[in-house]
Image (cartoon, rainbow, N blue to C red):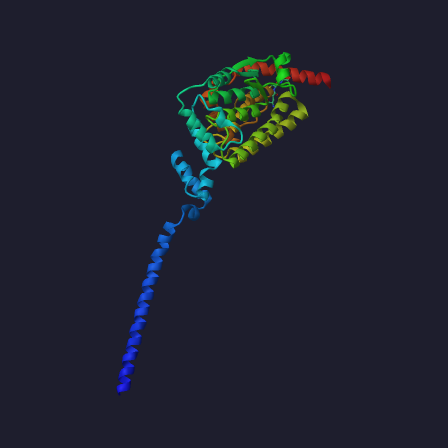
Length: 362
Ligand SMILES: N[C@@H](CCC(=O)N[C@@H](CS)C(=O)NCC(=O)O)C(=O)O
């Protein structure tokens, strides 16, 4: 009996220890659960969100906060110093500025360095002689050789005007081009040529890219590399496929019919794949692709009227048709389109001459 009493006590003690142990375990488990959340909160946001989301977060911060985050860790530094992030900050900083320091535009310089140099430059209290020379050079030595009726000419005018860059226009007489054109563009001997300082640049779309890189205000190309690639794709499409309409303008019969079909095919492609439901090719703002296709807003109608062929019909290409209206409504474009009647007269003569010379040569 005495033994069973002590056994009972032992059993009770074991049970009590077991209960205590279970309580302790349960407490530890609960503590662990909360600790998990705390643990996540304590973790580096760079590890939790990853590079892309951090980039998006930093994009929305002001430049000073982004600069401070450079010091957090190597991971943060790699995001906070990226060109993708700082190129948009540079654009904001440079918007509307009359003077953008040359140093900040050195090719290969990181956008973060370009931003810091511009901020330092903005704090200077003295203007040096070199800066004044830069200004004189940039503002008074842009020579633009072209011809008023040329859509290639107008492209460059639109780009310069959209950016507010002054230039001296030099009208070329195309049948008797100046010696300067032959000197500046010895390969193609064509307009347009932009002479910046003493440097000639040829080919309208290449000139426009140069303008966009030299004067970053009101950007014509997006800063994101992928979007830039897509933009260049459509500029190339405009360059390659636009040609058919000009063939149609200068031809007749079978050749004209073939050019008409090719032109319609291109319009279908642009309508379906290029423009989408956007107001402009780049979105809400006019950009380089709009400039590349800009000739469709006026010259295409002139060609249709002279040749007697309808291509851009509203019911067939509603988006593209609406785009031509939106494009012409932009103040800078409206102010810098050639006079419609003068253009019509001139182009009638050009077509007659083209058909005359083709029939006399056949
Ligand atoms: N791809 C060139 C085309 C330039 C072009 O065709 N220019 C014509 C005037 S619209 C020209 O200079 N023609 C003179 C000639 O061929 O002698 C550009 O975009 O600048």
